[in-house]
Image (cartoon, rainbow, N blue to C red):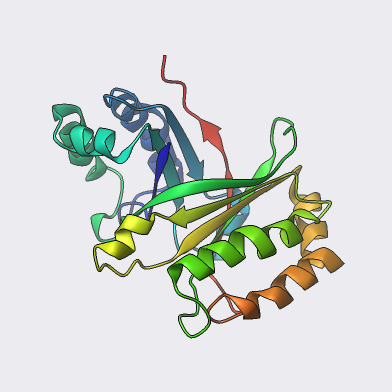
Length: 228
């Protein structure tokens, strides 16, 4: 399947609670009506992102799955999709909305308990080290298994920007998004202190731009939206 990942900031001046409520209820009701939609997940930024007056770079991201890109092309022409886009003006900042079409690579997939936290990091390749195919291959076949050794990471998924995006001569804002799940905040913090993570960060120099740098990230609460 093909996955679209869309991230954004809330509408200027809108309280976080109001933003989340609109997204979770009225907007979700519109998205679930999209023809051909196979799965829909909302990922609002965790409450810790706002502590002590902090403001995350994004208030969350959404994931939608379709069988193929042709299904996405068809839904883009539908009145249901027009309704979704019209409603976005009611709760998000349109200028911040950014979307990538991705192929998922599941690297580690342990069972998740309710309340597990999700950690997403947006990454870019170093073109001096790899072309697109080389970057995706290294990330998938070398870096992925290295990251999967982390005992505090229960699930690990790589989201590779679709190859066709590059074939059309376009340059994406990022080349991929890594998503991992930990049992809770304590386990996520333990992951950050682990030797396995140190080795994973060290390996970034072999395929990523700005290895070890401050890459955009979000800790989120994952919400699976039922389509029935």
